[in-house]
Picture: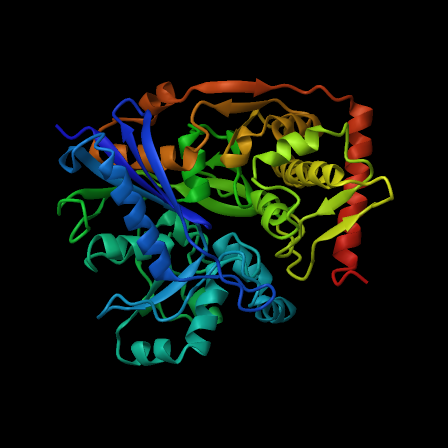
Length: 500
């Protein structure tokens, strides 16, 4: 009997393919990176074919480990970088332009015009999202306006579009399925939060025809079957899809209202389960769909995200060349006792929640003759934690109560110095699970439920296990002083975006 779940975790810098067994344990995973493209300052693109090739390579390398036979795979789960938008030709499956990545700010002026015209409240009321180039709608509009091949395909009735989950589902089923789950659709600015359908007024506002969009389906259930995928037999059911942050929330077993997690990835993303209630934020956060199980009501969430988290460490490595490997930042930062007055606001692609300042640019301030690369490294880790504090405090304000211990995951959650700083600056206990790549876990859990490998979320909750807790070790006075220095640096960044 097939007893393994194959999880595809398609991220911003690479694709991971993993095997999870019937006990919910990660058996093996393979990651294949692919390049990002920056055609202009603030613009970020991926070649969709690079994404598909990275998935195929990771799958091939995983299968060569012979942990199980392809026939032992019960189902496939997909989780993906959200908001990244791609158009392709239904007849050939060929992408018609590079995918526009969630980090891309090319549509900032268009979003500003809509905001100035008074459309933000309506967009927020219907979609739960703010008017920002982060989300997919303005990206689709740009592709439709600027790519002649897309306009030709649209005229011929052959244009398909979607986020990366839709593109992967299309490729995995050889074009048989054009669908997206509710969690990804909720990140486009085109889905109505209440009825979970494409919203006619939002489609009109962003000039996106509904004919190009995928059908919206639950996050768990029979979503399609493999066909023509190298290394896999035809007919494996694809039974789970969720955007990466919602998948992480599910993978952290945050099934109760008020449960929250923070994923430390390319960006940092904090999501809190609000149950079946659509909670409207007064503090600059987003209302979104967490997931929907087959036949059940949707589960909603509050979310706040910082665009740059682990990407700041990559920039220190690749841009400034202060470190050779990303993990080296912990040792370098720990070589000094504190940030030495240096502040780094990593607004390298603008600032996300709660500021939503697309025009903001990164700043490093407080440098003296005594400043070293170690202080910059320490300031980078501090920034990764402090920007999350800003978001979490807004979340508590919206809820009107203190949050439960925060569950953490993602690659940078392995950095103990960063995790202790997060606990100290937040003033809350952190809990790190044994499996920190919870996006894979979430995709697997959703797929397993969809195929009946697990029967309920209660069963999944028994699978989840903590690895370490980080308790607060900083005094309130020191916490407040550190926060004040950070907030001053952020204000400087907001009001002097060009560095004047």
